[in-house]
Image (cartoon, rainbow, N blue to C red):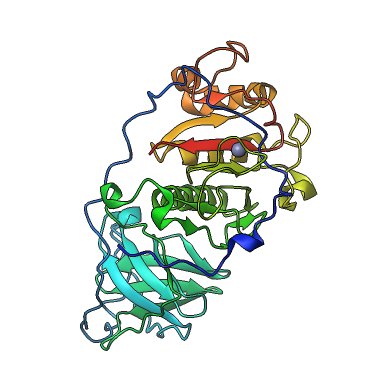
Length: 343
Ligand SMILES: [Zn+2]
């Protein structure tokens, strides 16, 4: 898959970023976090074929399997500059649609529940048609019967690409775009491998679905566009490291800056929802989390996941030097955590 790059240049990169301090990979880091995420069998089509005419009202009716016959409402087609490129039917949340946003030139894949823009989210995906909710009203988006124009500056996000076909290096690096469910601290330092970006986007969306999207996730540094040395980080060289703020309570929750978390401001439930969504990608090698913050999370993890899972995932309570767990203490991770994805 060819991956278009957005016009961010290395000159935008600020080395004044307050990032993750030095944290070389500790020896003995557990790698038993499960297999790589399973490759998705379907790849997004590279060409757009004309499809059937816009759906009838009946075609666009939700197919809830709760036995109720939904009311047949003549939903209007959306007037937003969105183009439906592909749909993948599936059970419930597995259905997906690849949509191009004509304003941003973003081509990405969405599942039911995902936001496309502020105030616009996907209600359902069916064969060749997507139901959208826009400011409380239902609209539909169907495949064009003509040719879809793509722009050379379009940015493709390979959410549907065959996992095994994606490069592991920065040769096809893409930048995380601004999104409705997250903020990015520094433009120009959020480059990652396509696989990392895809997994990060998946995890953020899963977090947003579980928390109604509030507060937003605060993303810090990934890597520079070409990868390589990225002071003051020791890692963050290969597009697989991501710094993310803890989810906080009160007004601090919306602050883009990384703020030190403690018992008085840590949103334990949402922080765990975010960590859990990342771990659910089955591709996280480890997460650096300050030991005292692991302590604050521990009881909640035991309650929600069970003692065995807490025991496997957390280093706590074995001590901050223990060579155990996916969540590991590393100095400098009180105001953000650091996710390292597997290749
Ligand atoms: Zn880091």
